[in-house]
Length: 415
Ligand SMILES: Cc1cc2nc3c(=O)[nH]c(=O)nc-3n(C[C@H](O)[C@H](O)[C@H](O)COP(=O)(O)OP(=O)(O)OC[C@H]3O[C@@H](n4cnc5c(N)ncnc54)[C@H](O)[C@@H]3O)c2cc1C
Image (cartoon, helix red, strand yellow):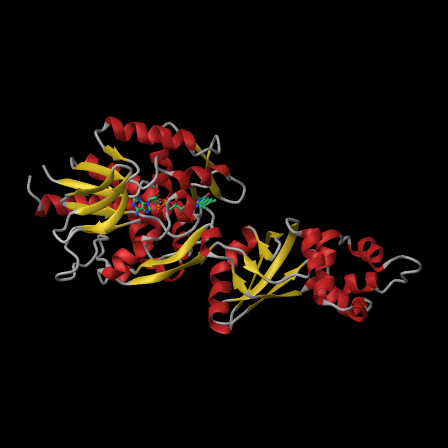
């Protein structure tokens, strides 16, 4: 009987395992950690945004340059299929007001527990604390285990090793060196859905690190120079900003910084208030009131929002109602760098899709890489904003890789 080794027990690896097993393949699942799905469980802390209800053409556009390829993965397993699959594990889902889809109990643990139990019952063999190190000269897989190095033979392999964010949960990107050594083409991992450094004054950091900035409207330019706007919420950090609004723009901002050395983001601190009316309100006599009190009374801005104005305007400019109103509507923030990938929600970069065929098998490289090695999940070179798009593509690519591996084994491996 031919065997498949799935390495990496996140959503992508578990899904590959499930479909390959359903196709009658013997599956061994390996993971470096003591249990599977650690990042999936952490995603559950934020409510587990499983997928999104947006209809397909718009859904696929979330994958930016990789829209076409990911749309191909989603053809067999889209948001509806994912919801039906969760239902099969006894987990109902609902569509939130933003169109995002969550499990009814907003938790990942029941879904993961039920899934792992089902995989055990189906005969999948789990091998935890097995850190994949690469291949031996004779093609066997090498694993570091608590009992020393173990070498294992498999007829096909699915690599689902994750990206580079939150490495403490298992996906540390160490696989990049192993695959590069084998001449696999890999785009360097970069932060995606990440915060940015701005460099506040010590005064601002001391008082406002952690303060929410909501609501605000962001204005920014993409790589083609087109201006966009989006309303949402962000958070001032000790060094800059983060939060759902910033994550949604992070790919554009990161790419602009890579090209130009910095990126300009404008925030409207008073959405819904017109510039002219703000200016008129600020031009009213201040009398004996402090500038901060005047600002609060006339515009409603206080705390972190008010302090942000002091970060970009000097005293004279703050006293000028025209300048102050214009800055409230378009506060310029010069972003210096993205936060490190380890802090990001996800990573961009990874195994370039050109290195794989349409079935997600790595193109064999004579003398370097045999046929029958498939890849899935966040370790592939695509990115998407938060909103359930990340997990959906991980599940869908895992499914495709598992099905493809089973089909490949049926054609090529000993029975
Ligand atoms: C805080 C947080 C919240 C998130 N919330 C959401 C959300 O709500 N919705 C959403 O769509 N996405 C969310 N994401 C992103 C989502 O969790 C990931 O995109 C997804 O888990 C990636 O799945 P994966 O299977 O590709 O990799 P992972 O889930 O990272 O799994 C990879 C597995 O491979 C194992 N591994 C790595 N290297 C080795 C090795 N050398 N040997 C053996 N095993 C190895 C790891 O231990 C790990 O178990 C969130 C991420 C974070 C950090």
